[in-house]
Image (tube, rainbow, N blue to C red; front, side, top):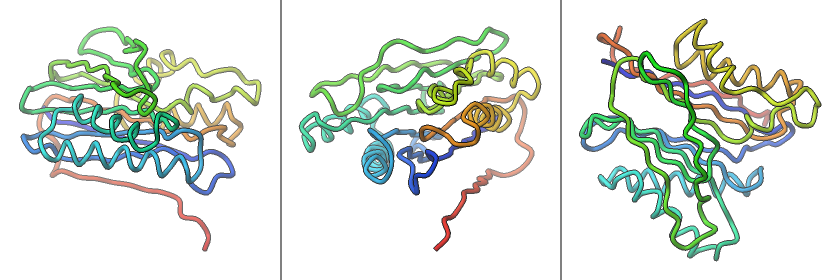
Length: 237
């Protein structure tokens, strides 16, 4: 088996800095973790919150702390520092080679969609507590066995808000995932396709920061070495 990961994100229209932050880290016992956070509100203030949350989680994971415990640590310190007045959402998607599982950790984030091998798409959509508001927040953790064909897709709430102000109607996320996946079953095609549909509904002026993350377990050997490719716009200085 081999792993394919893709991320696509865009900032809110007319904001110089978005409030979503994503980091990737190799796990000390083998595997990879993707950590996605959306800070309260938007702009630089939201960015500072999400960066802090992600860096705290990543530092815990780097020390071998389990995903749920890392999320709780970020919550406890954020609550202690800000007294329950500041919040953030968090999603961690980890391919854990020690447990041979895909570990999905959610705190206040939108649903995570999962497509099991040979099965139907379904949502992990139980209410999960937002980071920072409560002293003893417990994240929701789901573990799935690593199998060829397994796919999971996480996103921030900008995808849910798309079309709300333009009047074009909300994006049907599960139907969009199914349609894109049937056409091109790849993580990159999925995140690009979802973001493109979101922008279309917002008439290319996104009403919120939007990030889409997908992981896909594939059969067979990878076509080459481990690779990472990234592109991002830079502001005019």
